[in-house]
Amino acid sequence: MEPLITIITPCYNSADFVSLTIDSVLEQSYTNWELIVIDDKSKDDTCAVIEAYMQQHSNVKLIKLEKNGGVANARNVGLSEAKGKYIAFLDSDDIWLKEKLAKQVSYMEQQNLPMTFCAYQRIDEDNKVISGKIAVPHSVNYKRLLSHNVIIFSTSLTLKSAIGSTRFKKAGHEDWIFWLDLFKKPFDGYGIDEVLVQYRIRKGSVSSNKLKVIGFTWKILRESEKLGFFESAYHFAKYAFATVWKRLK
Image (cartoon, rainbow, N blue to C red; front, side, top):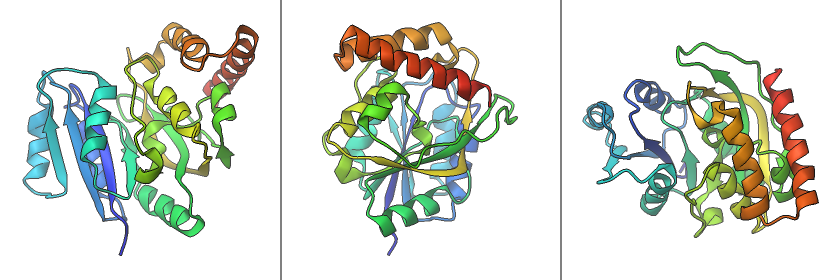
């Protein structure tokens, strides 16, 4: 029997995009999954959109939070409710290609791997592809992640047992901090260099604000990871180069 995958999707005012996201889950060739959507007190019609899917699909679930607590809190709530052998994170505006889960589970089961991620393309708010393939390495460890977070969250699939008690911290770049905390255990993550995800770039998002990203990156190296100044500068320089190179693709 195929192992169960728990898909965790935090939502906040996501009514414009979440239908495409959920549709991409429903269209997966891999069928043994549960989708847990955590609404972070949206002010738009996000919950109504998701409730319409719940009426037709018993494996789509909605948790409505009573107050807005941010994406880190929402993901932690999802982790506390997860029943799957594997955990997949999917942001509420990203899109999976049909074979995403099947290819990752097959690879992980055959090779007994704790975590995989895949290549992706960027799309804009109009669903237009705005980049070529963003390639990923064969594998990544903690030291490599210090220089550049090559793991887009919606591309990941991780054993729940590997995550264990690791949880998200409320901070800028919480995705990156989560991976750094997890990879300290230690273990390696393994890349599938095939585009299986479309990653949406939205105007005004943190990832599109270069100054905020620079500040968060330096703060993580110095405060979260407690690296010395020169070691931080080394990894920061590598991060800056990788970021510029990626944007040229």
